[in-house]
Image (cartoon, rainbow, N blue to C red):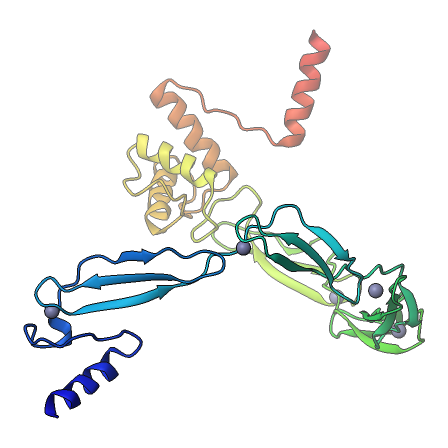
Length: 323
Ligand SMILES: [Zn+2]
Ligand SMILES: [Zn+2]
Ligand SMILES: [Zn+2]
Ligand SMILES: [Zn+2]
Ligand SMILES: [Zn+2]
């Protein structure tokens, strides 16, 4: 009686697998050590296969069924042509079992013609188009994207000035909707400088220029064009000046950056004192010429002359004439 209950429990545990005799040698289901599956009956297209495997340690065994094989039809004959609304069918004879094999043929795609516009798109609303299948009459709908406004030229309603933004109006060529647009303020257009006071020695001059659009006047302090001075924008000319002053023993600072600092001012002033010039510390045209002359004399080299674009052009012309 008890043995029967244990047997029933084992059957439940193995589920689909059939437990056979339960001669206790392996202590649990997990303990069995099965060999490989052996085929008793091979599967065909009409029959499942049947396989067994045996425990190496006890006389427990398992069985399983393997699925039927697919039929192997030869040439198939279409018995119903597919359309765009219905599937088709085809049949063949299985070369293994001689049975009839039936297969479905996929539906054909619809044969849509050109799109017909049902609703024209506007500037702000999508339109709609339709396609119709020539075979079955099925209708397929498609969205035509909205066009967006076609803004024309801007008509100025308020002219911009140097001080304030202006405004304009644009009109859509299609739907006549209007919109207001901002016109950026103008930038001053200054005329030529007028010198109010010439620079003199260490003292900067004063000059001013006037905006030709709004009449605004802007003035600034300035040194002459060819003067190099402390805290000016770093440049090549400062580097050349510092190199020469260094060769002449007046300057001992850094050269690479082209920055005119207090050390350069001191060096220029010392050079000026030694050469009978006013010791302003500014490298004006006369001072720069004196530095070049002193450097040429001391080194026996010539100062390389750098020409601006206009000078280069006339020099090239002169050379061409000679040839
Ligand atoms: Zn076993
Ligand atoms: Zn078959
Ligand atoms: Zn169709
Ligand atoms: Zn529009
Ligand atoms: Zn202005």
